[in-house]
Image (cartoon, rainbow, N blue to C red; front, side, top):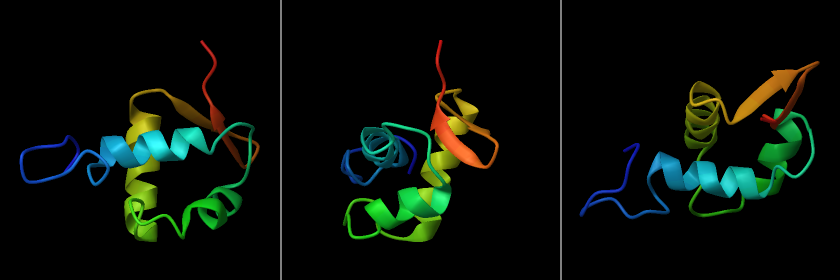
Length: 75
């Protein structure tokens, strides 16, 4: 479920959903605002998958939360 396999397409794996989330995270914003942008995207699917993708991005250090806003981590 995290990585694509022969049975799970790239856009359905959490890493693919994370890439979609990152494309829409151009500036810091609330999680609710980001979800509102992505809720109609079929690849993201449910709120649960959206949160799992955010968790994955946070664990690998790509996003961070500061002052209630989610943002890309600058390196």
